[in-house]
Amino acid sequence: MKEPKNSEANQNVLKRFHYSTDQIIEKPFNWAQMLRLLAYLKPYSKNLLPSSIIAVLITTAVRLMIPTIIGVYVLDKAITNKDSKLLGILVSIIAGLYILSYIANYFRIKWMNILGQSVIYDLRKHLFTHVQHLSHRFFDQRSAGSILVRIMNDINSLQELFTNGVINLLMDMLLLVGIIVILFTLSPQLTLAVMVILPIMFFISTSLRKNIRRSWQNVRLKQSKINSHLNESIQGIRITQSFTQEKGNRMFFNGINNESYLAWKTATQKNAMFRPMVELTNAVGTAVLIWFGAHLIQTDSNSLTLGEFVSFAFYLGMFWEPISRLGQVYNQLLMGMASSERIFEFLDEKPIVSEKTSAVDIDEMKGRIEFENVEFSYDDKRKALKGINLEMKAGETVALVGHTGSGKTTIANLISRFYDPTSGSVKIDGHDLRDVSLRSVREKISVVLQDTFIFSGTIKENIKFGRPDASDEEVHKAAEAIGAHQFIQKLPKGYDTEVEERGNILSVGERQLLSFARALLADPSIIILDEATASIDTETEVQIQKALNILLKDRTAIIIAHRLSTIREADKIFVLDHGNIIEEGNHDQLMNLKGEYYHLVKAQFNMLEAI
Image 1 (cartoon, rainbow, N blue to C red):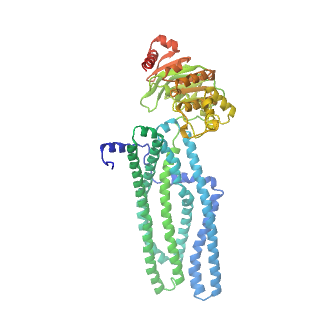
Image 2: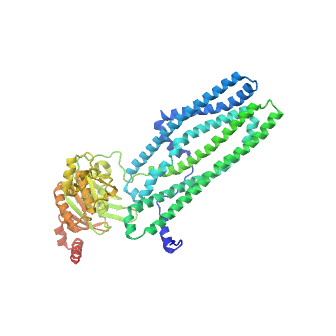
Image 3: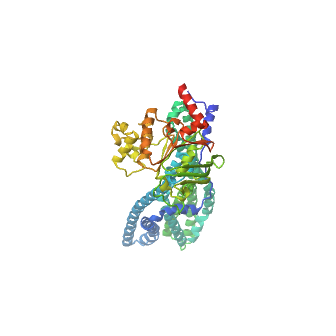
């Protein structure tokens, strides 16, 4: 059964296609940006690059010499004068030059491939490292697929430019200049005659530049959308199948896949226009050469000999070759510009949370936390926190309670300095976090989220993620303390069991236990549990609570939970509502107050009774 093409349902599905954080970047082609890209060649300017240039100079010199030897010396001297000895010498010289050219070309290709791959390696490493240090807001505003396409596809598209394009540009420019000089030396009149077509070709090719560049930018944009959708589809496949939305998902993918196909088709068609134009120019130039060259030989034999005419024909054929390749290099430059603009857009992105040059390290963190009149907004419009003042003493277990959107997770984000307050200050041990190095803050804070992330690798590697130098014994002790050791031992290879991305071979509760063990092994001064027990059954929760009562001793703990049974033993409870603290105290104090907290507890109790 065929799917209807224009139904309202289909149109609604395809509307999703218009959502994307990527846009075509409108900037003029400028050599300043290209020079910025070529700056990645600098580390190789003392070895690979000079060696490649020397190989190019040898190859170019040989190519420029051979047509003169054939025309001027072989034809006009050796053959005309029937000098077989000179002919033998010239043939040997030509053969030697071809061998020299072959060797130089071999090393040029070898060195340029190494150079190109090295630059791509450096560029990808630089971009990935930079992205790793960007603020959470950067990732909030972009899909994982759009970031992936910059690091992989856009950088891959520069490979041909660095492997062949840059050195070919130099080689073809040298070859072109050398050919023009030789052509004018052989016959200025004939050279001017065959060059008359060049201004026309230059005008046409210049007019194509903007359209070609925009087309390749559009190709990158469509690829980014495909990558974003693929990443979303794979991660959300269970939801897709649960709601039987495979058809809608397929239609959406077909839509963006078709857009990508059309973008490639348009870009390649525009690229394809350049080479036939060069070949047409070549045909016209050859026609002029034959007609006007024959005229010069017939009317004035002193102005052009037959050998010089043959050499001229060789050079003219060679002349259109670098012109054609320069067109290809120019297309590579356009593709490189389209990709480099997208790469540099990320590299120019500055972390919203930045570290001062005068930032100090907290060598020993006790864990006293203070919020002084803190306000915060994610979008500069709606305030998530409104003038918050609170204090958490070192070693206290503090709970944050409130409805969704009340500001609980925002407080946790500010403590970890994933964001900076819009106004006011957040202090740890009396230090404003903006005056402290990020590493010294975050390495002493462990965060456990509801949606825990398990990396590809072994169970042991996942537990050691926050402290790679931990011993196996320390890993086992952390797992035992949190109650994960028992289920780990039952796995096929115990702690050496391989888990795939997101730990799909483990249950939700088991993944959460691993995240607890990971956090505790890091031995933090502050532990933040953001709905960390929401996915754990009651029996496991009791087990974890017992372990935490021991392991959180002398550590500051911030617990965010909707299940209020998990926070009864907290030293202090802050109740939030729409970015304000409306109540604070321990469980008994707040229950006696019979305010918002009291009603939240009663509501949950009544709900459990109803169940």
